[in-house]
Image (tube, rainbow, N blue to C red):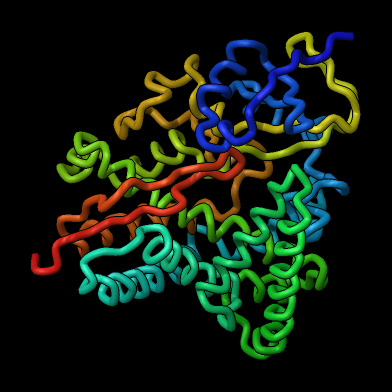
Length: 390
């Protein structure tokens, strides 16, 4: 039996910038065991793309996983028929047709209102004052939890994200996560009778209409909040930062050489907001001569696969002209992100062009902090713009 070789990391350095270690892991072996994470890391793009589809081996059903323990067993943590039943139930809320016919107009309205409100200030934090607010307002209407403010949604989202990435077992992080999920449950309970009386296209409403149980719809709303808040927030702020620090790439967008959607896809490849997805090995399996055993924990490292030098021409460069076709930023198998159409519309069709149109002379006003490896994005980002320009 051949087990994966060990690769040791400095957890803090890995959080600050995981890419040098990920590059070394790809070079060392197809799969490495990282004792600091107690997990086997699959780092090469083609291996991830091929093996994520093998749900009988790399199972998303993880009863002992942090997400299941803290948030309930959502559709992301189910395989096969149970997964597809719930995915079908939520589809009417996030389908391309619903996004175009229902959500896009709402996205445009509140994004313009937010920027009109903040423009006279001349400066702000792109993460906390703009991207977080846009993302939160979108999530309020899509989930159906309009009884929560965008600030509350961001707080509970971060609480759950921190809890699901709490592999060191910090009890304070767990306590905050539990408080976040309890707050969401209370808000769901308040909205259920409202949406039974007056159904709409929201995630909670379509699940009620499909007859899902309270455990099912609660877990899936929490999943949407955990991923639907921080990821759009991080991409809106992160893509703004990338374009401001790469003026040659910004010029390609301004000239129309590439679309905002192409810029979005390249950023999602280059700085994957979801850098990892965990799997449980369900039965013995061998990958490139490396033996995996039942109950081994495998991390599919999307952030590494998206910088695989054997696949991408300029893997470590932000290049909006790059072919992003092989990108696995939204996943590669049956668990491909169900909210991808809403995310693309909110960010590429609405938020990014409106931000650069409504905030003329937009520029950095300090040095942003960026971090994370399981989830990655700017932590803060001071910006300024010209108030008097039309």
